[in-house]
Amino acid sequence: MNIFITGGAGYIGSHTCVELLNAGHQVAVFDNFCDSDPEALARVERISGVRPRLYQGDVRDLDVLTHALRDSAATAVIHFAGLKAVGDSVLHPLNYYDNNVLGTLCLLRAMGHCDVKQLVFSSSATVYGDPIELPIPEKHALSANNPYGQTKLVIEKMLRDLYSSDTSWRISILRYFNPVGAHSSGLIGEDPKGTPNNLMPFVAQVAVGRREYLNVWGNDYATPDGTGVRDYIHVVDLALGHVKALERLQSRTECEAFNLGTGIGYSVLDIVRAFEAACGKELPYRIAPRRSGDIAVYYADPSKAKKWLNWEAQRDLKTMCEDSWRWQSTNPLGYG
Ligand code: NAD
Ligand code: UFG
Image 1 (tube, rainbow, N blue to C red):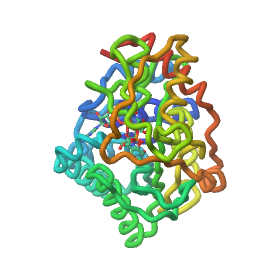
Image 2 (cartoon, rainbow, N blue to C red):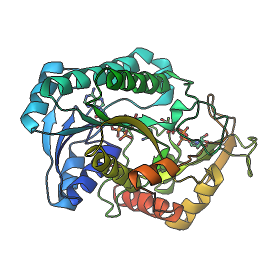
Image 3 (cartoon, rainbow, N blue to C red):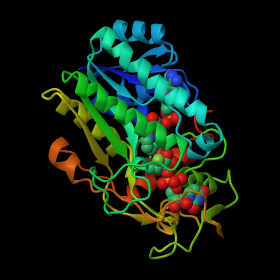
Image 4 (cartoon, rainbow, N blue to C red):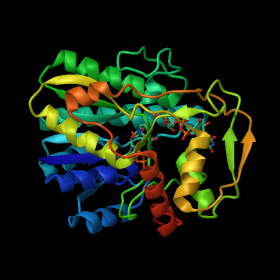
């Protein structure tokens, strides 16, 4: 298959390029590099032996996007391009509506113009808001606590409305839990700009000496050790979920949402201990007040993806930490 990947130079996109190429597909990447580095695609080539074809542009530029999609001769799209920092979305909400919602609207129009009607979309577990049921099934009520989450909700609704209006579309909405880890080669990984917001890259930067200590945001939650519990999923497992989602769309017209998680919850202190074992060092941390907007516990019910996509996460927490450490220790400054 020939697949067009928006945001393909980013963290999840680059790992997905590798797994698609490994599965024998052709990929074309469309990215404006606002949150990534072209070096990631050179690394994809080192791993897979194939350099993805690159179109540099912004998904909100309809003409450029339509031209690239047509030129690529792709039959399916995976849409990663977007902004993802929750805190930043509270400070700059319009940037998020503009990039994420308008960007997706332009993409759907471009796909319509080119008669490409297969789409895999990156959604997030954030669409479940504060969960009222654990593990969280796809039928859980949807809500959002911040503008970033709102953009994912609006886009999901837009996709369902589009499918209702034209049932020849084939749409898979993938709701990621907490992606972590890196490719086992250590060549590609997460490379956040500035101070990382997320736990695993922050811990990795403490381990490599770029940060003095980790702030643990709260130890008074109703969890076994008082710290927040999440469903961490290895980015390679996540990437493989996209390959499975595309395979399913070959035989179905539908618009369906799937959780991509492991179904297992780990606390912040579980992560610190697992990372210490992976890097062979003690990692300094301090207990700090709760981070505003944080939820105590969430983890996925991944059974729908297992049943319908024939997909299940395979990599455990030890592998997530070892792979993350290999990437961070061999690329202490990321791609830069
Ligand atoms: P990332 O920032 O590493 O990758 C996003 C890519 O999109 C980058 O290469 C960036 O340059 C590109 N991009 C952004 N806006 C663009 C635009 N207007 N035009 C063209 N390219 C643009 O992020 P990621 O972690 O790989 O996330 C990919 C997707 O998955 C995002 O939609 C994100 O919201 C979603 N998601 C991520 C997480 C996570 O924790 N990483 C969790 C849930 C959902
Ligand atoms: N945490 C710390 N210290 C840090 C960073 C995080 O203690 O420096 C804690 C948080 O309080 C939370 C846990 O580590 O308990 C995980 O936090 P992350 O920031 O790594 O992840 P979140 O679950 O808060 O959010 C992530 C993404 C969102 C996405 C959500 C669901 O950042 O974009 O997962 O997919 F919506």
